[in-house]
Image 1 (spheres, helix red, strand yellow):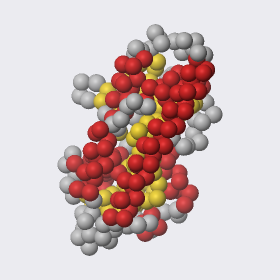
Image 2 (tube, rainbow, N blue to C red):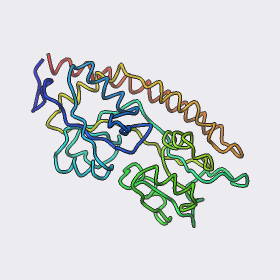
Image 3 (cartoon, rainbow, N blue to C red):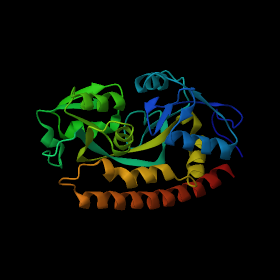
Length: 273
């Protein structure tokens, strides 16, 4: 197979992600890279016979600094954002989640169906999570307070520092299950996030190769989290129609991605043959 650009399968590819982003990715106490994204990375390594050099950063902001200073070849990123689109190709992962509103448990709290209902609230948001720009643009006059990671946001809601936090359903579910029993999902937004691997444009062929490889990967853990999310969602006023729509969207998304990657694989075969 002929490879375009600087990529060669025997050379380690420098990779960095978000070090405080469970259940998606993080480092355990022994320094091992763990989480749903790490499963995808390991799957690529196994199928291509390569080894990634996983760089441990202190924060998501430091990871972005590494990207901007050209210290990494690939990093975890969000699909459908403008940032880095001029310098990187982004391959979607099978990890997509709605953005939800998390607040303290309160039997009198009505389920929030629009971010506009958060007027006058202190809203914790994670700095440089680019998918949130959609919400900022739609609701520019709210009191957004940037924090470095989701744990800080959700712990702040638990302690009463912030009124609510905006984060992905998957991250909220995971952190609440870890012991933040006094908070719950109290509302929805119309925004979704999807994770992907962003690869430098020097490695265009490599980007196409991992697209083809990831056709055969599915995350059972992600499916379980989606199925269990109602356990930490406010029961009073729960919008089951919204839940049903989420399931339909996820199913459609999986089918569409399978078709898209199949077509990409056919194009890749023509390119590399």
